[in-house]
Image (cartoon, rainbow, N blue to C red; front, side, top):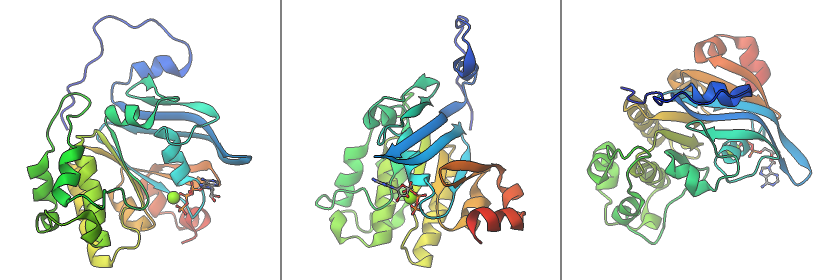
Length: 261
Ligand SMILES: Nc1ncnc2c1ncn2[C@@H]1O[C@H](COP(=O)(O)OP(=O)(O)OP(=O)(O)O)[C@@H](O)[C@H]1O
Ligand SMILES: [Mg+2]
């Protein structure tokens, strides 16, 4: 994707630590550093670093309960980390509300489905529409319809009348209507029949090719690694691997030790 962002013409004041280096990285969309997150007294994330650059596809993997969803929520303002920082486009958003982070171009498709069951497919999509963080309106109703022909056949159906796969498509369609720079997908294919799951994977490929950065959490590690530029693996709330997907998929010992496959 063409990157039209440029550094500010006036030099920024020199800063110590990572803040300074971040400001000189205009391609950085999301950067978490040293996150520690708790639920009550349970210490879930133990100093996690995670970053996404413009246009990147990142696979976030780990077995059940290792902290993947907690990491996503900690970066999205849905769960407050006790320690660490979250920056969106270089700006400190650690204490920001979820909608403020979304406004800066980060869309989130949570585990389970996020649609309005009493509204039609059309209404679900139209009410989500807005320009991207930089004013772009590349994604609108027609493009989402073209990407999800199946939704076109159900355009006046209520959300509750859709199949699981169609609801998931609608959830992703709603996220695209916000013209995000980054789309975060948590278990988008969970519980779907293989054929529908394959459709979702093809849609994720289309989204990736359109230049939107993606973070993909999915139990289908093979599919994740085939798409991701970089893979990150969590074990008990710690990053145990961060590197090229090929490096991970080619290493049977790591795959077994970290992912149990
Ligand atoms: N709201 C909560 N309150 C208390 N503990 C929680 C809460 N949500 C998650 N946990 C615990 O935090 C740990 C990490 O959970 P998390 O949902 O982040 O894992 P995950 O890697 O996304 O797992 P899965 O693959 O099953 O979705 C687990 O031990 C889980 O039981
Ligand atoms: Mg999860």
